[in-house]
Image 1 (cartoon, rainbow, N blue to C red):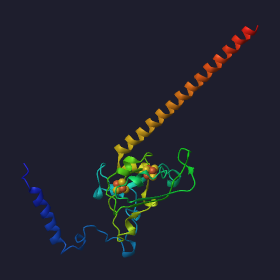
Image 2 (image 1 turned 120 degrees about the vertical axis):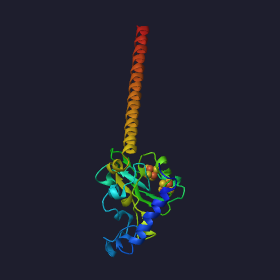
Image 3 (image 1 turned 135 degrees about the vertical axis):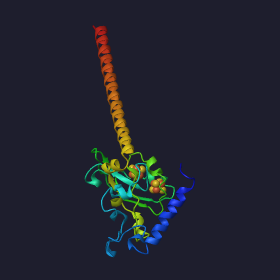
Image 4 (image 1 turned 90 degrees about the horizontal axis):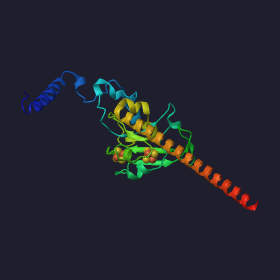
Length: 233
Ligand code: SF4
Ligand code: SF4
């Protein structure tokens, strides 16, 4: 049986151990250890850290599949801007409660990953010093283009510019999304595939109905023509 409140004492014991230890071991002084970085190599942009995608999945910094932090923009290929899903419709920008999304729509269209001509964001910034991680942008996006990242280590010595994430920082692959939120990403992919199948089936049914209607009309016209011919004879 665990004694009620014993967790508090355990936590205080860890703090006390580190407090005393910090007098003997320098590495116990900071909460976050950046001692391996030289002054000049401290992260200047949020995108500079972690160094590798998915670094937060290491044992020391693991977060659960269901955690979320700030939004990211999805793309479907190796060249992010060629397969970016966002079409710069600006629905998320208008829906964001603290208004921390800034989008500039492109002036021209380009092909998306399905070959359809679409607008794309010329600029897409999110100020994560303001973002409250509410996920409303994700819920309102009609293109499954924005989802929540779980990357939490965004430390930067630049309090203002460093926390303004630009398109390059925000763009992440669908594979990365599967790595950090496997269940959610699989469910989203399945829904997208089901919707596509249903849309294609509806289109096919509509085309078949139109074809049948045209055939029936042509048949009726031929019949009427034959009748007229008979009357004339
Ligand atoms: S992320 Fe979605 S809602 Fe926001 S601009 Fe892009 S397509 Fe529109
Ligand atoms: S998570 Fe909420 S606050 Fe952050 S950008 Fe999206 S809508 Fe705005």
